[in-house]
Length: 190
Image (cartoon, rainbow, N blue to C red; front, top):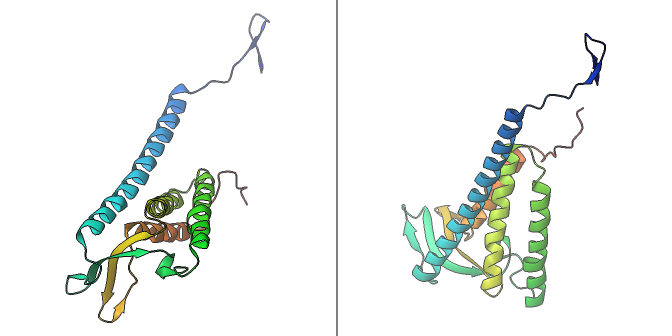
C-alpha cells in the first residue's frame, strides 16, 4: 500500500505488526501445549501407578470391600475390551484388534484432535487418548491383557471390573459429547 507524502514522494506503508500480541499468542499456545502434555502424562502415570499397586497388593479371588461395599478392589486381567468383550477370541485376533488396530486408531484420533479448538472437546480428547494409551501399554507388556481392579455398586447392582484408564476414557468421551461434535478451526461459519 502506498501513501502520498506532503513532498510528493510515495512511501511504502508496512502493515503494523503487534509484536506483543504475537508473543502473547505464542505464550498461550505454548502454555496450552505444556498443560495438555502434563495432563496426558499425569493421567497415564496415575493409571500405571494404580495398576502396579493392584498387581502387587490385591488378591485375585476375594475382593476388598470399602465404604460399606460401595467400592470393591480385586485384581483381574482382562484380555477383551469393555466388559470382557472379545476375551474368548483367538489370541491372534485379539492382538490385531485390541493392540494394533487400537494403536492405529489412537494415533489417528490424536492427529485429528490437534485441530480441536473447543477446550472441553480438547480435554475430552486428551483423556480419551491418555486412557487408551495406558491400556495399550498394558496390552503390549502384559501379553495382551489389561489390569483391572475397581468395581463400584450398590447391593446387587454392580459395574464390571475396570481401571483408572477406563474412567479417563469414559469421562473423555462424555466431555466430547457435552462439547458437541468436535469442531476444527477450518469449519465455515453458517
